[in-house]
Image (cartoon, rainbow, N blue to C red):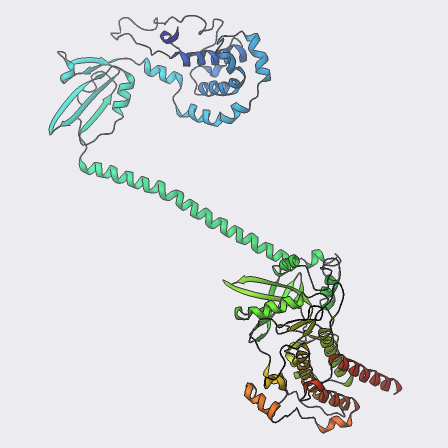
Amino acid sequence: RGGNDVLTPLHCSSRHPLEEPWQPDTSSRSSNSGLRDFQSPTIPPAQLSLLRFIDLCFCRTCWGEKPPALWNGSLIVPMIYGCFVATLAPCLGPTLSRNPIRPRALIRPRLQSCTMVDGVMILPILMMVAFSSPSMEDEEMKLNAGQYKCVCEGMSCGNGDHCYGQQCFASLSNNDGVMVSQKGCFQVYEQGKMTCKTPPSQDQAVECCQSDLCNLNITVKITGKAKQGEALNYSMETLTIFILAPVVVLVVLSVLAVLIFRKIQQRHMEMLSNRDAEYGTIDGLIASNVGDSTLAEMLDHSCTSGSGSGLPFLVQRTVARQITLAECVGKGRYGEVWRGLWQGESIAVKIFSSRDEKSWFRETELYNTVLLRHENILGFIASDMTSRNSSTQLWLITHYHELGSLYDYMQVTTLDSISCLRIVLSIASGLAHLHVEIFGTQGKPAISHRDLKSKNILVKKNGQCCIADLGLAVMHSQTTNQLDVGNNPRVGTKRYMAPEVLDETIQVDCFDSYKRVDIYAFGLVLWEVARRMVSNGIVEEYKPPFYDVVPNDPSFEDMKKVVCVDQQRPNIPNRWFSDSTLTALAKLMKECWYQNPSARLTALRIKKTLTKIDNSLDKLKSDC
């Protein structure tokens, strides 16, 4: 056995072909055919052992003594053999080296305990190999193919002009410019198979055939340079196609992936914008009506930070990314104010320009101050730094008040005594809350606004007002005795600047000086509101302070001359003295804009005075 054994197509019978020596069957060959004896190739010992094992497992163990009908020469044979090898090798492999031929009784128990995982894993590879290669029967037919009589011309023919082989050929070669023609036959099938499939070149060409004397009239031509160039071009075109095709496919798939991703993201954002129906019944997330109560309830419940300063920082970042900008409601020197939608509710988004980053940072810092929340101070929701249209935007998200600023509101609205007092009293209450310092474990520092004016005061739906825009605010704590002025180069509005600010005599290291500046500005706002109060059917049109002595956009020097040098103040109409409420307001505003800062009233004193005026008005109306 070993290297001298010859293998025929495997079959299953009562006598196993691999357990006994094989005798070649030559009965089907005619001794008078004139063909030489066929020499079968030998099988290496390692491959023979593997084939013995496969045949034993498959024929005698799985199928019994009779194989299926598809066994003989089918393409599925190598596939089935390969599958069984892959399946049984993990179980029976260790025993192969000791005893390749084992009784069926010892093999079947192992077959029952084997797993099919390994065979299934490589099954596709084995199927591809099996179907891409010729079957065993085809190979045997090629090996047993008959020999043909061929014309023999050339040096290898010797004295004869004929030879016998499995294929006939005719060749033409170029040896240093000399054309050499040969004809003959191939004795070995593999040799002819390899040579005949060699493509023609400019140095050699071979043509083969399979019949008696078939190469007699074959004319061989050597391929010229033009055809070689065409072949080269063909190869380059093929190579180009093979390179570009995957690239094009990848580009198309990438574009599709990007489009799908953007579509999914767009749907996700639409879903976030339209979730009020989904969350409308959950307490603490959204209320039934749009207004102050919605965000107030949310901020007053468990989702707050517990300090009265608004949402926790992580929630702020989440809220900011769920906002859809609806419309622009105002523009200024330092940015824009937009009405936005968050979970179906209107909110205000103040977008700072990049040059006013310090103002945004300062306002964010102040709004996050502990215990700053007050009904007469604009409610803070969140702040975030986001990117829109390839530019960085600084967002400050607050409550939205559809009536707008006090400046816009007074342009189109006249006031009675009750609504007038409600407005000025709410402003004084908010200013008093800013100025006061609250002591305790979670206290609040004293804060000065420094830019109080009618455009920085918003009108709420209930008729009250709230103070906004803390970008220039100053903080002071008596505990640490530190004055935090901030690092903002922005200055206040010149029209509302106090005399000590205009002539630069203010004590910048004293916090009370900043509070007195706020009181002066409050007196001017009080004058603006009082002008729009109707008394005896008379009311003045809205005008800003000093409208009659300075231009629309006064310079620093213009205001300094009017306020400091001339010591002028807004004119009080004579009709005010015929109304008790306006008379009391006129007296109060004069005490707010004294030239001497120390003589001005405090915010708390103003609040108490306005409360007293309001109570007297209520008493007067009840008596009537």
